[in-house]
Length: 400
Ligand code: NAD
Image (tube, rainbow, N blue to C red):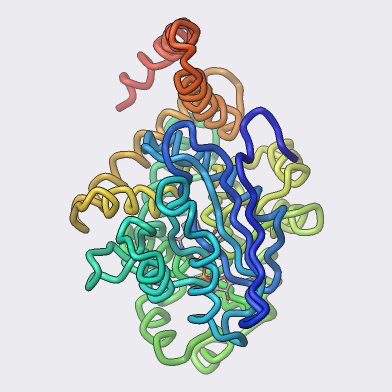
């Protein structure tokens, strides 16, 4: 799967003492050290870790951060193995690359506590972001990613309504969220605070649905003690988790895992009247499914545009900033990118993913030319890109 962008390094790690099996993919470091979380799940594969690392390359470039793209993966069930021993062992194995070529963070299956162990084992606070506050961190558990997803959802609904592209009044939009961990729960919390009606949520144990809107503050509070949706039964009827694709909702937000919107589930979303997909999870939609959704007039806002809140917060932590600075920068950068992507897509008949990829690739390409010392070529390339963007930007300015 290697191509003109990377991956630059793939490191496999195995520790016969603990049973730890891990992989680190450093995709592209032209802009800066590869940034990306460590995913901890039995389903993790090297190919998935590579695909996630590539998303990070585009995400950091689009967000204008001085990071490249990378990702770590631990192939085991964090609830069944000695997770501290696995994390320590993984950190030891990849230490030569941290933090000059790789800076870690949390992802599915890892938390601020894992980051505490990782940073301690590497012996450098710059080893990872998303550390506990006691270690000077800005934990992802503050909801940085979900905050960015909520801002992106709100702005996308309002912008598409203003363009007349989607026949949906933002204040009447109904929302379904798949995945109720870090990203899904905070997306729900912030959207609820913005006044949106969340009609369905699902986690790995089940789905709950109320066409009148779920009581998100109650659910968030209950889930602190009841752990999962299955245990919420009482106030809500718990349905199988797959029902999330069938409930009637205008906006579908996948916030769980990879490839969940595929050729089996995309037709269900079309049937249930979905008008917009906001990719809170990384790589939740397969290429074929996205094509089908777009053919049916459904807008898909890509992961690396809308879920960059976590890595933007990470950047603020990396340079020693505060929680408030992190939330302010997330709002600014996500809003700017959503407007840029939607405005260029609207003017040029492109999809949001095509636009976002074009912008991100241009930035990475230029950094690659610069690091090769091809300064003149880089300048010429940049001048061409700048001219192309400037032709598009004035209308963006008019809209802001
Ligand atoms: P998490 O482990 O905190 O939560 C995952 C949630 O998804 C859980 O509620 C789990 O029960 C649910 N889930 C898993 N498989 C499911 C299935 N088949 N059906 C329904 N629910 C399912 O993980 P997270 O940190 O919230 O990450 C979720 C996604 O967001 C991942 O794709 C991750 O890469 C992406 N992401 C996370 C961050 C971050 O800051 N944590 C940042 C950017 C992107």
